[in-house]
Length: 257
Image (cartoon, rainbow, N blue to C red; front, side, top):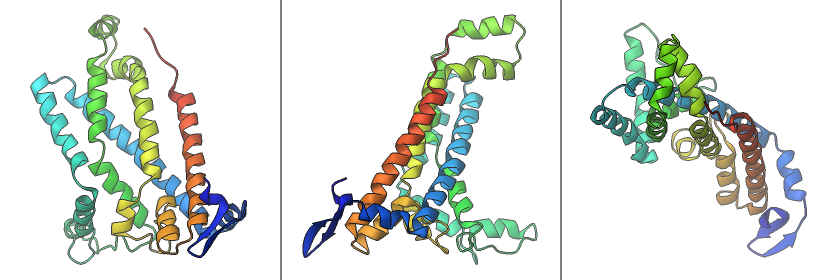
C-alpha cells in the first residue's frame, strides 16, 4: 500500500500520491488483464466446482475404502508441482506433435495452435485447470456429505423424493457452508493465477492471456516500476474483496431442516 503512493527507484524515493493509480487506470493493457482475469475466474470456478460436486455425488454411495481410493486418486494432481503440470500440458497442446491434435486428427480435424491463437489460448488454460484441479474440493465435499444426517435422506425417500430431488433439496442446500468456502478460496486462487500463464503463454498471444498477477510481475520485476505494480496489487485486493463479499451474501445463509 505504501509503495503504491511512491515513485520507488534505485536512486531515491518520491511521494507521488495517486499518480501510480492514474497511470494504471489509463493503461488499456491493465483493463485487458482485468477482463482476462475475470474471464479465467468465471470459467474455472463454476466448472471446477461442478466437476467436484458430480464426482463427490458419484462416489458417495460407495463403501469407505472405495471412497478413500477415489478421493486419493483425484487429490493426487493437487500435490503435483504446477510447473510439471504446465510442462505436460504444453506437450498436450503442442501443434505439430501434441496429444490433443493427434487425437483430433483421427476425426479429420486440422492441427490447432491452442496456445498461439487469441480465441483458444485462454479456453485452453481454463480446460487445463478444470481437468487437473478440484482434488481438495472433492475431499471436502465428500466429508461434508458424510456429515449430513442419514434420517434426512430416509425422510425424503418416505416422502417419495427421487435421487435427483434428494440431491437438489437436501444434499446441496446443506453443503452451502462448504461450497461457500470453496467458491471464495477458488475465486482468490483464480485471481492469483500466475504459474500457468508464465510457463505456457507469457501473457500472449496479443495479451489475450495476460492476467493481473502476471502484469504485476512484468511491471515490477522486468520493468522495475514498483509503484505502478503495487497499485495494481491494491486494485487486485479490492476486486478480490468485492467478489468475496458478494459470494458471502449469496451463499452465506445457512439451511436447517
